[in-house]
Length: 140
Length: 140
Figure 1 (cartoon, helix red, strand yellow):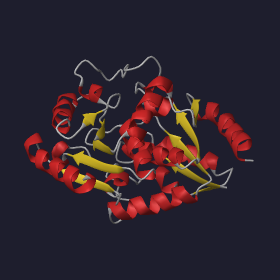
Figure 2 (cartoon, rainbow over the protein chains, first blue to last red):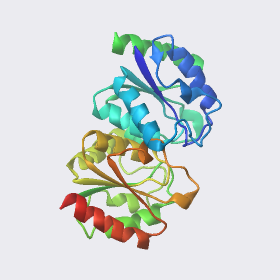
Figure 3 (cartoon, each protein chain N blue to C red):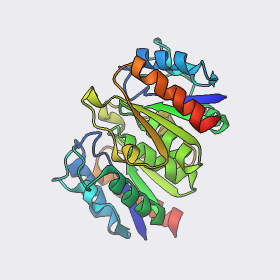
Figure 4 (tube, rainbow over the protein chains, first blue to last red):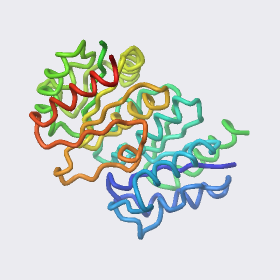
């Protein structure tokens, strides 16, 4: 299985260590195309490619080739929203992971989208069985 | 012409007064379906509908019925990113308005997307002729 993991880069890197843990867990189910999202050396300068055009086109090609999009949506990010929008519009399966106690309010466009499977969680231990369920029920 | 204007709500309302001015200018070219985005009484609680599902489905119907999406992308917003992603994926014309001196870094997924027409500006007076050009060249 090809998994596109989406998390905030230029929107803020506060959750980068969490992204890395989620990516590690997702790798039990398939190939994570965007492993760099969890890289602690990737800052919110977001210089993970020579130009914005290069980054966009590379990431979009990965997204289009993926079987599923998994997005951590707690940290507000324009790019994560864009990727979810493109995936939903193209009919791809989308799992969003959200921490309700973060103090940030989730967008109604994400929380209210019927095509998105939403998992609310507090820590990675709560999350693991729900990701496993999604992967079993939705994909296989 | 039917115009969908997108701006941040739950991502932060710092630019609400600017949204209202942009909406006023856009109304020279057609009907702005999302006039409430510029309402100074709309806070980042984002309670512009009874439920998130209601807000999502209403806004998506407006987006699908619009001839063009105009988005102010300076304030980071998951919902604005989502709307841009759905519009680009469905082949709709998209104009993004961005203030480079804001201190916020624009997502590579927005800045690097070839299908988006990007206008960088500092104040509304700089913006008006560029919106007029877009409306003339892209729509008529």
